Structure formats: structure tokens, C-alpha cells
Amino acid sequence: MSDEKKPNDRRSFLLQAGLAGVASLTSVALPAGASTPDTALIAKTEPAARSFHSLGPEEAAFIEALVNIMCPADQFTPNGVDCGLAIYIDRQLAGPYGQGDGRYQSGPFKQGKPELGLQLPLTPEQFCKAGIAAVNLACKRDNGATFDQLAPAAAQAVLEKIEDGRMTDPRLPLASWFNDIIYALFIEACFADPMYGGNRDAVFWKMIGYPGLPATHTIDMVRYRGKPYPGAQNPKSIGDFS
Image 1 (cartoon, rainbow, N blue to C red):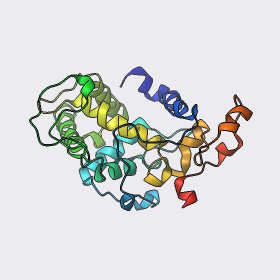
Image 2 (tube, helix red, strand yellow):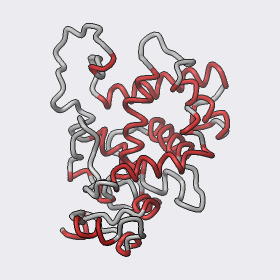
Image 3 (cartoon, rainbow, N blue to C red):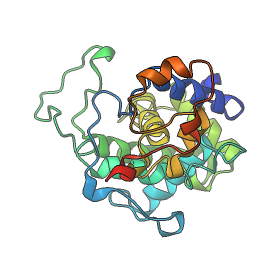
Image 4 (tube, one colour):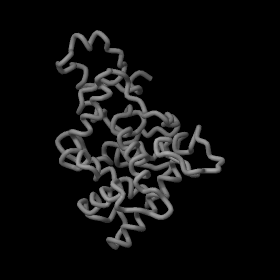
């Protein structure tokens, strides 16, 4: 990954990503183009009782290893798995977003400009799973083990190679797989409302001082500008109002 996403700098990057949303004091929402997860798939289980609706055992092991590399445990948060990041990603893939809801899927698929977004005859779920399989194959070829079996430093190196285009696959654009699917879902998982499975216990909201919902704080923007907001230590989720 690029320098801003390496372990030593990742917390500052997450702070910057999260604070960009806090500056406007709007509710944390999914990035443009992502669908709201199916509420029937929302996880309300503890870390020890994880279950997956989209990912198979090998795929889940891959994603859990990946989120732990991208979000290692430190003084700010637990590791990515215990923050619920893998669960969030799984729920998104199993829901409307992962199934390609609203996407044109009939073809023909012609090569277009990169700024036009994903141009594959695959749903996000299919693309994600195909990328996992391709990366595991490359890891076995180069390291003799699947991604989840690699030491953290070796797994980190694999992600860096994928992101900057040094690891490729003839069938899939792996750089796009990482940047457009994996990393986008990772950021969503960190800062989305906890009711969707990630950001467990609002740990990332607490890290950046975001008070959660209700997020209509126009007066507070004046009253607490440049000061810690008292309610930020106990953020409110959508679930707290249901």
C-alpha cells in the first residue's frame, strides 16, 4: 500500500478520513454508489459468534487476515476482526450492493475510461471473491501459502504489490479489485453506523470524536468549534433510536 496506508501511518490516515466527515457534522453514510445493507443481514453478534452470509470459509479467512493487517490492534482500537470489519464487508457483499443492485449487467462490456468506474461483467461480490482466489493463487505460487497463512509483514507486502500494480492477474485487474472494492469497503466498515456490523462499539467514532446520531449539530458547531464535543465519548447509533 502507499505510504499513507502503511501500519505506522494508518491511524493518522483513518483520522483524516473520518474527520473529513465530522467537519460537516453529517451522519456517516456509505460512499456514493454503495447500497444500504439489507437489514435482515445486520450482525448483532459478539466477536466469538461470527457468522458469514456471503464469504465461504477460505474467503472469510482471507478477509479476516486482511482487515487485521489493515487495522492492527493498538492503543486506539482492537484489531480489524474484533472491530467487526470482516462482518461488515460480508454483509455488504451479501446485500444489494454486493449483488450488483442498480448496475448494468447485460453487456456488451467495452473498455472505457477509468473514471467511468468498474467495467466488468461481475457483481461486486463476484469481483471480490474472484480477486481473493487470484491473490491466494499468487501467494501459493510466490510464498507457498495462502494469504491468511502469511506472516503479517509478508501479507502487508502482498497488499502493497497489489495496490501499486506490481502483482497482476491476466483475468482480473487486481489494483482495481483492491482500491475500488476492498479498500472502499474497509473504510466504510470503519466509519459506518455500528448497526451494520462494523465499527463495533463505535470505536472509530470515539477515535475521531464523532458523536453519531442524531447528527444535527448546527449550534454545536458554533459552541464547540475547536473544542472536544462532550457527547463524542458516547456516540449514538441508529440502533439506539430504534
